[in-house]
Length: 186
Ligand code: SF4
Ligand code: SF4
Image (cartoon, rainbow, N blue to C red; front, side, top):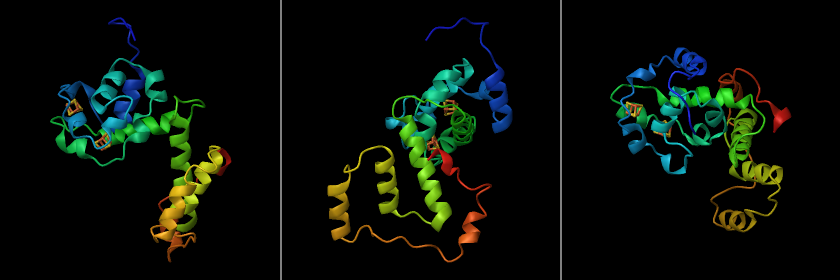
C-alpha cells in the first residue's frame, strides 16, 4: 500500500473521530492495545494498525478486513491505552459502515452472517441455542455436515440441547434492539 503525505483524504477519519468521540492524534503507536488484545492473533490487522489505517485513509482496507468482526468488545485495549482511545467504539463504527458494502474480504461475509444469525436467535428467544445457530449457519454456508460428528458427541454428553427455549420476559430483551434484525439478508 503506498500513499503520499499531503494526499490523504481525512473525510472518513474526521467523521469517525466525531462519531466515536476520539482524537487519533493522541495515539502514541505504543502498541499496548495490541499487546493486550484478546483476539489480535485472529485479526487481519491489529488494533494499533487499525488506528494507522484510519489515519492514512485506507477506507477500502478497513471495510474489507476481518478485524472489526473479530473484536469481542472486551475493552482490555481501552484499559491499557495511555491515551484512553475507545477502540471498541471504533470497531463498532467500522462494523456499521462495513455492513453497507456488499462484498467483504475472504471469510468476512461468513463472520457477518454468523453475527446476524446470532442476533436473530437473541431476538427470537432472548438467548442463543447453540444447536440452532450452528445448524442455520452451516446450512446457509453450504457446509451441511460440517459439525455433525462434534454435534453428536456434544449431544450425547449433554453439553448442548436439541431443544430451544425462550427467556421469560422476551419483551425486555427485545427492548434492547432498536429494530428487528434484518432477516432479508440472512
Ligand atoms: S475490545 Fe476488541 S480490540 Fe480491544 S482488546 Fe478487546 S477484542 Fe481487542
Ligand atoms: S494503546 Fe492507545 S496509544 Fe498505544 S497504540 Fe494503541 S491506541 Fe495508540
